[in-house]
Amino acid sequence: MMPSKPNRAAVVEHPHSFRPRSAGGKGRISVRDLDIVFATGSGPQRAVASASLEIQPGEFVSLLGPSGCGKSTLMNSVAGFVKPTRGEVLLDGHSIAKPGPDRGMVFQQHSLFPWKTVKQNVAFGPLMAGAGTREAESVANTFLALVGLSRYANAFPTTLSGGMQQRVGIARALANYPSVLLMDEPFGALDAQTRSMMQENLLEIWGEFKNTVLFVTHDIDEAVFLSDRIVVMSASPGRIIADIPVRLPRPRTQELLTTPDFMAIKRECLALIREQTLRAFEQQNQAS
Image (cartoon, rainbow, N blue to C red; front, side, top):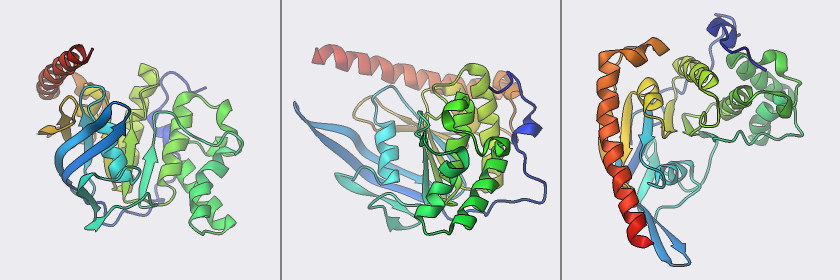
């Protein structure tokens, strides 16, 4: 298990000369007038409504909103798991039709292969992309060093703590050098101390890798701490109702959470989320 408060320098193990391959200015996400409607037993259900969003290469953008507002659905459309009913989603000007190695995905549950070692899990993506065994292992070693888990390369996922499993998940998502990293509440199941450490570690990795991050969370503090922008979605059907810039200095540490500028952004988000959560409750009461 990880210590309760590890030294951050020990988390990123790679030598100073090491630099992962940059995303190279790629990773522009364009969501244009997006509608997503699902067929259900009670009829069509509109999950996302008329959503438009532009994310620049290298930006860190969080999606925030009440439960069931379509945050994950919107992210899954960028991943290529869900097709638009109307509108389009583009990556670097090309319409997204299916999942691809240019988009890495990290879920709340780590989804690692329990029968494979940590290194084998991280090497899996490069192998599927056509890399030879030696090259895939080299890539896996690179990213395990980046997330501070080189010493656990031959361990199995079930022997690791929750935070360590998520670090393996991040390494696996990065192993194909994606221009976009999609993260769906990746730290939601972690305890507060581990979650805090993981947030800082993620910002270090993002600072090295320079890819675009789209991050779904229910946690306002987390969204403000991590992001360049916070996109707030309405109660279902999910519409984009606010796009809030987070002009806080980087690099960021947890001391930022008590500053007046941080609290001002948090209050703005809280007011919007409370309004939309009340609206969601009203919708549920009317439906019952």
